[in-house]
Image (cartoon, rainbow, N blue to C red; front, side):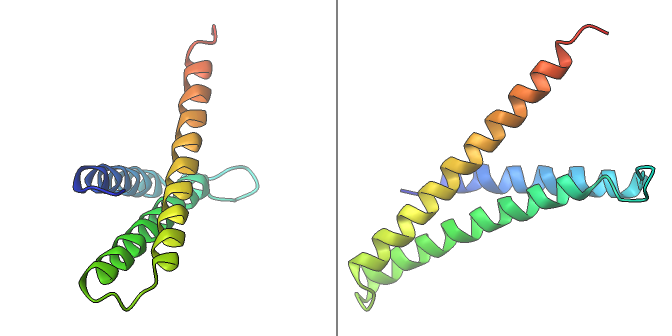
Length: 109
């Protein structure tokens, strides 16, 4: 399910996104209609945090089931599947962003 190394990988991605967002907000560039450009970075960071929360909730549910058994197996499985789907969706978004970046970088000037 969720092991310590994958959680640390997620936390590293969150830290990198936070650093990128803070660096970008320090520059405070704006588009011509005065909307901040950092919206994408902050939305992406919020999505990553949401996925992390979902994974942590699933891990807590599993731990509670293992310790006291007060939680039903159905709840454990549903939370595990939610975390799995959220993580897979995040990976797909990451892959699309990397592909778009590679396409832009390979364009001739």
